[in-house]
Amino acid sequence: MKRIIATLIILFSITIAKAQEKDSLSFIKSKRMSDDDLAKKREGTFFTGIPDFSSDPVTGFGLGARTNIYWNGNRDNPLFPYTPYLMKLTANAAYYTSNARELILNLDVPYYKGTRWRFKVDFKAQQNPANLYFGLTESTLGQLRLPSDENTTFSTYREFDRARKTLRPGGVGEADFVTDALSNRFMETEYMLNLKADYALGNGKWRIMGGYEIQHLSYSTFEGMQAEAIDPITGQNTTAPNGISLLRRDFEDGLISGVDGGWVSIIQTALIFDTRDFEPDPTKGYYFEIANEYSSKYIGSQFDFNKLFIQGRAYQKLPIGKRTVLAGRFGAGNIFGNNAPFFEFQDQWSPEGSINALGGRQSLRGYRANRFLARSMWFTNVELRVRLAETQIGKQRFAVGVAPFFDAGTVRDRWQDLNFKNIKTSYGGGLRIAWNQSTVLSFDYGHSKEDRLFYFGIGQAF
View 1 (cartoon, rainbow, N blue to C red):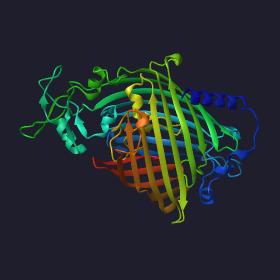
View 2 (cartoon, rainbow, N blue to C red; view 1 turned 30 degrees about the vertical axis):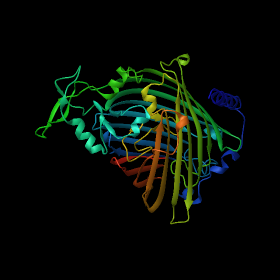
View 3 (cartoon, helix red, strand yellow; view 1 turned 180 degrees about the vertical axis):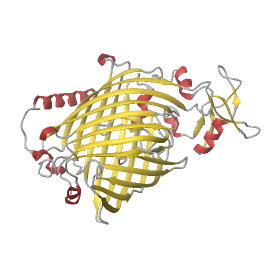
View 4 (cartoon, one colour; view 1 turned 90 degrees about the horizontal axis):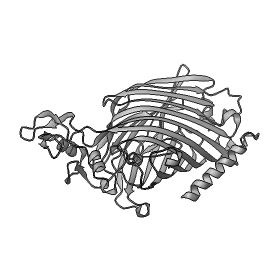
């Protein structure tokens, strides 16, 4: 692991030394857009903005605004056929019925001034009281368990949710009668700044990336808060103090760390292979990455850990209809270090954006976010993206399509134990609306043995 990190850092340092070298555009010739997509690509600077009517089974119904400003340049610009845009500024702000709220700013500049450099700046401020926690080992692959009684299990989330809300006698440190309605939830408050730069190597298919991220995180649980409850005798809905949460129990038992929050300082490195023709919505090409996050007290962090994530994606246009694309992804990750905080188990970092692991819109769409967590994991997704219709209203282009999908994955306490046993699967269908090509609205309905969930978001799942 240390050799991998050292190699990535050395390669990145070499590219910095060569940053001022002049180069032709030969290094991105392989990324030329299809003639059909190129003919529809819009010139100049334009704005896309939509109300954020997002829906997620965890954070609830969201209301806000999602905006993008694109600088595409003119058609005579040599970069025009090869880049999704010359620069993009994204600003997202939203409020959810769960009382979650977020502000996200992103700046992306690919192939800066025709050079091999790409720069990204990300800022996020969010507070989310609807994060879920079901445990931190491969035992989460079992059936759902009551936070206060691990011996009571349920095969469906609906049964589990009703049982959590049913009043029970309080234990030590609890009221006389309590509900567990909020006992799998916790609140996270996060402020994050991330700076990244990558450099195209050779013919441009390979890139080396380096970045730095700093976060401040704080957490709280809902002991004693009035929450939904069900009277076990009458079956009537009522309210009662919430019992001790599962996250708090595991923390006090010494099973996890990080509940007190704090500062997290991270050095990011990645080696990337990318031949996609159009990043926001590819029709062909491959994407492969080896991504690593290193956190240590030596760089100002309160936690010591090392996260490795390997991901591969493939896109192939099929000779069916005008635009039918078979898309697939496989990812595997592992967390090294005994002081890794619980919250680092909940996502895998990628230069393309973090991925919830395991469960939710980005991995297993038939399960709740973070439903399965452990030190090691793998997952896969397959989608068939079929374009049904296209239209133009004024200068705005729209396209509508469908995307049936299949997801699978599993987790383990050791990477050596990763295999194809005890796999969790989900399947479903999606609706896709592409606005000026680069903005894709996604509606997904996922089905599993445990749950049925609906999602709406911006961008393809991968």
